[in-house]
Length: 251
Image (cartoon, rainbow, N blue to C red; front, top):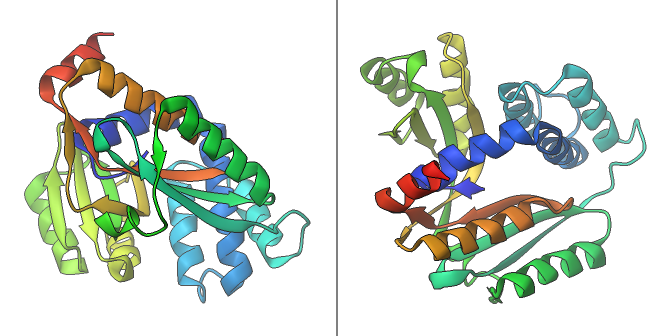
């Protein structure tokens, strides 16, 4: 799950990435293919590709996987023809959801996403009705043991970051998409490891979920979407109250 949400985004997302690393690699490989297809396979000339290669390295994606995805995108290997798509709607409690897909079969991806929405009792919205509630930003997560807040603050602001937020276990660096690569490279040059880095959608308004059943329902829905092969990212604007987070931690 991508976007901006203290407990639901950072902790839940990292746990899923650790448990399903192969799926994470597959999704990043698709993004690399699209970027290489659009702008060429030279990371020096293709800024989008360079950012994705850095994202791949941040989750320890093997070099061979990265190079194979680039070659598929440039046509040197077969299998790089993918189409982008998006779906928008609302989950339980009016939580906004934006689903991004990369697929070689639009009908299949549309059917799969529609089935997940129907099963969860979620509703679709017109294109743009939900996504306009989000801003496209660069987001970088850094474990607190990597550095201290003051050092990181000076570093990222000097490199062009917009903000630095402190969470329970992580620092979250937020950037304009155009400054994302420069900030990421400055962090790497300082010897600080990133737990995650990506261009994402961050909501303007957070919906706090204060009921356990509703939290379960929303998380099951998002999990179901993320498990679909064609789904690249699921963006939402929900967070979980501290008492609900504690109950989920105890499960």
